[in-house]
Image 1 (spheres, rainbow, N blue to C red):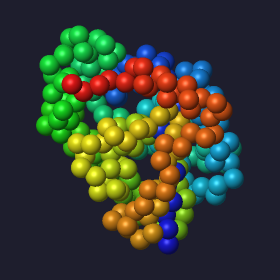
Image 2 (cartoon, rainbow, N blue to C red):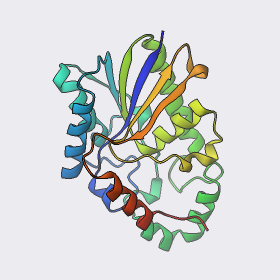
Image 3 (cartoon, rainbow, N blue to C red):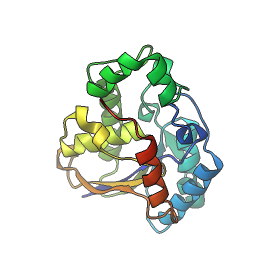
Image 4 (spheres, rainbow, N blue to C red):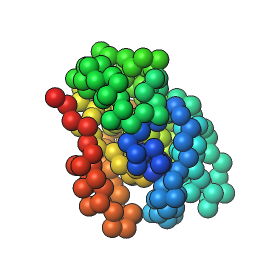
Length: 222
Protein backbone atom coordinates (compact mmCIF):
# COMPACT_ATOMS: atom_id res chain seq x y z
CA UNK A 1 0.00 0.00 0.00
CA UNK A 2 1.62 3.20 -1.20
CA UNK A 3 1.87 6.22 1.06
CA UNK A 4 2.16 9.29 -1.15
CA UNK A 5 3.71 12.38 0.42
CA UNK A 6 3.14 15.79 -1.12
CA UNK A 7 6.29 17.40 0.25
CA UNK A 8 6.11 21.18 -0.03
CA UNK A 9 8.38 24.12 0.64
CA UNK A 10 6.59 27.17 2.04
CA UNK A 11 5.83 30.23 -0.06
CA UNK A 12 8.16 33.18 -0.35
CA UNK A 13 8.94 35.52 2.52
CA UNK A 14 10.52 38.97 2.41
CA UNK A 15 13.71 37.43 3.82
CA UNK A 16 13.73 34.90 0.98
CA UNK A 17 13.60 37.69 -1.56
CA UNK A 18 16.44 39.47 0.27
CA UNK A 19 18.48 36.24 0.52
CA UNK A 20 18.49 36.40 4.34
CA UNK A 21 19.05 33.25 6.37
CA UNK A 22 15.79 32.52 8.21
CA UNK A 23 16.28 29.29 10.11
CA UNK A 24 14.11 29.28 13.24
CA UNK A 25 13.19 32.96 12.86
CA UNK A 26 9.41 33.16 12.44
CA UNK A 27 9.10 35.22 9.28
CA UNK A 28 5.63 35.43 7.65
CA UNK A 29 4.83 35.00 3.99
CA UNK A 30 5.16 38.04 1.78
CA UNK A 31 2.33 39.13 -0.52
CA UNK A 32 3.96 37.10 -3.27
CA UNK A 33 4.24 34.13 -0.91
CA UNK A 34 0.52 34.24 -0.13
CA UNK A 35 -0.26 34.20 -3.86
CA UNK A 36 2.07 31.22 -4.27
CA UNK A 37 0.46 29.34 -1.38
CA UNK A 38 -3.02 29.87 -2.79
CA UNK A 39 -1.89 28.61 -6.20
CA UNK A 40 -0.45 25.52 -4.54
CA UNK A 41 -3.73 24.93 -2.72
CA UNK A 42 -5.60 25.06 -6.03
CA UNK A 43 -3.07 22.67 -7.56
CA UNK A 44 -3.86 20.06 -4.91
CA UNK A 45 -7.62 20.74 -4.73
CA UNK A 46 -8.55 17.50 -6.49
CA UNK A 47 -6.36 15.27 -4.34
CA UNK A 48 -7.81 13.10 -1.57
CA UNK A 49 -5.50 14.10 1.24
CA UNK A 50 -5.86 12.24 4.53
CA UNK A 51 -3.81 14.61 6.70
CA UNK A 52 -1.87 17.88 6.55
CA UNK A 53 1.37 18.22 8.49
CA UNK A 54 3.49 21.33 8.88
CA UNK A 55 6.50 22.79 10.58
CA UNK A 56 5.36 24.98 13.45
CA UNK A 57 6.90 28.12 11.90
CA UNK A 58 4.42 30.66 10.54
CA UNK A 59 5.55 30.66 6.91
CA UNK A 60 4.98 26.91 6.67
CA UNK A 61 1.67 27.04 8.57
CA UNK A 62 0.36 29.84 6.34
CA UNK A 63 1.16 27.70 3.30
CA UNK A 64 -0.37 24.57 4.84
CA UNK A 65 -3.63 26.41 5.60
CA UNK A 66 -4.28 26.81 1.86
CA UNK A 67 -4.42 23.01 1.67
CA UNK A 68 -6.17 22.28 4.94
CA UNK A 69 -8.86 24.99 5.24
CA UNK A 70 -10.79 24.19 2.02
CA UNK A 71 -11.04 20.61 3.28
CA UNK A 72 -12.08 21.59 6.80
CA UNK A 73 -9.01 19.79 8.13
CA UNK A 74 -6.80 20.54 11.11
CA UNK A 75 -3.05 20.97 10.60
CA UNK A 76 -0.79 18.77 12.68
CA UNK A 77 2.28 20.81 13.62
CA UNK A 78 5.61 18.99 13.83
CA UNK A 79 8.43 21.15 15.30
CA UNK A 80 10.99 18.62 14.05
CA UNK A 81 10.19 19.78 10.51
CA UNK A 82 11.64 23.23 11.17
CA UNK A 83 14.40 24.69 9.04
CA UNK A 84 18.00 24.39 10.22
CA UNK A 85 18.87 26.61 13.16
CA UNK A 86 21.35 29.06 11.63
CA UNK A 87 22.33 30.55 14.98
CA UNK A 88 24.17 33.87 14.68
CA UNK A 89 23.57 33.94 10.92
CA UNK A 90 19.79 34.24 11.19
CA UNK A 91 18.51 37.51 9.81
CA UNK A 92 21.75 38.20 7.93
CA UNK A 93 21.96 38.33 4.16
CA UNK A 94 24.45 36.19 2.29
CA UNK A 95 26.45 39.33 1.56
CA UNK A 96 26.61 40.21 5.26
CA UNK A 97 27.62 36.68 6.24
CA UNK A 98 30.33 36.68 3.59
CA UNK A 99 31.62 39.97 4.96
CA UNK A 100 31.55 39.03 8.66
CA UNK A 101 32.16 35.27 8.54
CA UNK A 102 33.96 34.86 5.21
CA UNK A 103 36.37 32.08 6.15
CA UNK A 104 33.80 30.13 8.14
CA UNK A 105 31.29 30.47 5.30
CA UNK A 106 33.73 28.94 2.84
CA UNK A 107 34.42 26.09 5.26
CA UNK A 108 30.68 25.52 5.70
CA UNK A 109 30.06 25.44 1.94
CA UNK A 110 32.90 22.95 1.52
CA UNK A 111 31.95 20.72 4.46
CA UNK A 112 28.42 21.34 5.78
CA UNK A 113 28.58 18.09 7.75
CA UNK A 114 31.77 19.03 9.55
CA UNK A 115 31.12 22.71 10.29
CA UNK A 116 28.49 24.03 12.72
CA UNK A 117 27.37 27.65 12.54
CA UNK A 118 27.94 29.52 15.83
CA UNK A 119 24.85 29.06 18.00
CA UNK A 120 23.22 26.85 15.37
CA UNK A 121 22.90 23.17 14.59
CA UNK A 122 24.76 20.80 12.30
CA UNK A 123 23.46 19.43 9.04
CA UNK A 124 23.46 15.88 10.36
CA UNK A 125 21.29 16.97 13.30
CA UNK A 126 18.84 18.58 10.88
CA UNK A 127 18.72 15.48 8.70
CA UNK A 128 18.23 13.14 11.65
CA UNK A 129 15.24 15.02 13.05
CA UNK A 130 13.43 15.60 9.76
CA UNK A 131 13.94 12.03 8.51
CA UNK A 132 12.70 10.65 11.82
CA UNK A 133 9.63 12.91 11.64
CA UNK A 134 8.71 11.89 8.08
CA UNK A 135 9.32 8.22 8.79
CA UNK A 136 6.72 8.47 11.54
CA UNK A 137 4.23 10.20 9.25
CA UNK A 138 4.68 7.58 6.52
CA UNK A 139 4.21 4.77 9.03
CA UNK A 140 0.89 6.28 10.16
CA UNK A 141 -0.57 6.58 6.66
CA UNK A 142 -0.18 3.38 4.62
CA UNK A 143 -2.22 3.60 1.43
CA UNK A 144 -3.01 7.29 1.94
CA UNK A 145 -1.94 10.68 0.61
CA UNK A 146 -0.62 13.30 3.02
CA UNK A 147 0.66 16.86 2.63
CA UNK A 148 3.80 17.87 4.50
CA UNK A 149 4.82 21.54 4.43
CA UNK A 150 8.27 22.53 5.62
CA UNK A 151 11.42 24.32 4.43
CA UNK A 152 14.19 24.16 1.84
CA UNK A 153 16.80 22.51 4.05
CA UNK A 154 14.49 19.78 5.37
CA UNK A 155 13.18 19.03 1.87
CA UNK A 156 16.73 18.61 0.56
CA UNK A 157 17.62 16.32 3.47
CA UNK A 158 14.51 14.19 2.95
CA UNK A 159 15.03 13.84 -0.80
CA UNK A 160 18.70 13.02 -0.20
CA UNK A 161 17.72 10.29 2.25
CA UNK A 162 15.20 8.69 -0.11
CA UNK A 163 17.72 8.77 -2.97
CA UNK A 164 20.54 7.45 -0.79
CA UNK A 165 22.66 10.51 -1.62
CA UNK A 166 25.70 11.64 0.29
CA UNK A 167 24.28 14.41 2.46
CA UNK A 168 27.25 16.67 1.74
CA UNK A 169 25.82 17.07 -1.79
CA UNK A 170 22.35 18.11 -0.69
CA UNK A 171 22.92 21.63 -2.04
CA UNK A 172 22.68 20.11 -5.52
CA UNK A 173 18.93 19.64 -4.99
CA UNK A 174 17.19 22.83 -6.06
CA UNK A 175 14.17 23.78 -3.98
CA UNK A 176 12.21 26.93 -4.75
CA UNK A 177 9.48 28.59 -2.72
CA UNK A 178 6.07 26.88 -3.00
CA UNK A 179 7.64 23.95 -4.85
CA UNK A 180 5.80 20.62 -4.91
CA UNK A 181 7.72 17.38 -4.48
CA UNK A 182 6.11 13.94 -4.47
CA UNK A 183 7.55 10.95 -2.62
CA UNK A 184 5.98 7.50 -2.84
CA UNK A 185 6.61 4.79 -0.25
CA UNK A 186 5.28 1.46 -1.59
CA UNK A 187 6.29 -0.50 1.52
CA UNK A 188 8.66 1.35 3.78
CA UNK A 189 11.26 4.11 3.78
CA UNK A 190 13.94 2.02 2.07
CA UNK A 191 11.65 1.54 -0.94
CA UNK A 192 10.80 5.22 -1.27
CA UNK A 193 10.76 6.78 -4.75
CA UNK A 194 11.05 10.44 -5.75
CA UNK A 195 8.21 10.91 -8.22
CA UNK A 196 8.39 14.67 -8.67
CA UNK A 197 10.94 17.31 -7.67
CA UNK A 198 10.76 21.10 -7.38
CA UNK A 199 7.57 21.30 -9.47
CA UNK A 200 6.30 24.88 -9.70
CA UNK A 201 4.02 24.52 -12.71
CA UNK A 202 1.13 25.85 -10.61
CA UNK A 203 2.84 29.27 -10.44
CA UNK A 204 2.01 31.28 -13.53
CA UNK A 205 4.95 32.51 -15.54
CA UNK A 206 7.55 32.79 -12.80
CA UNK A 207 9.83 29.85 -13.50
CA UNK A 208 12.12 31.75 -15.83
CA UNK A 209 12.10 34.73 -13.48
CA UNK A 210 13.20 32.49 -10.60
CA UNK A 211 15.88 30.92 -12.76
CA UNK A 212 17.30 34.28 -13.77
CA UNK A 213 17.26 35.54 -10.19
CA UNK A 214 18.93 32.41 -8.86
CA UNK A 215 21.71 32.62 -11.43
CA UNK A 216 22.31 36.26 -10.52
CA UNK A 217 22.29 35.84 -6.74
CA UNK A 218 23.38 32.26 -6.19
CA UNK A 219 26.13 31.85 -3.57
CA UNK A 220 29.10 30.16 -5.18
CA UNK A 221 31.76 28.02 -3.60
CA UNK A 222 35.37 28.93 -4.24
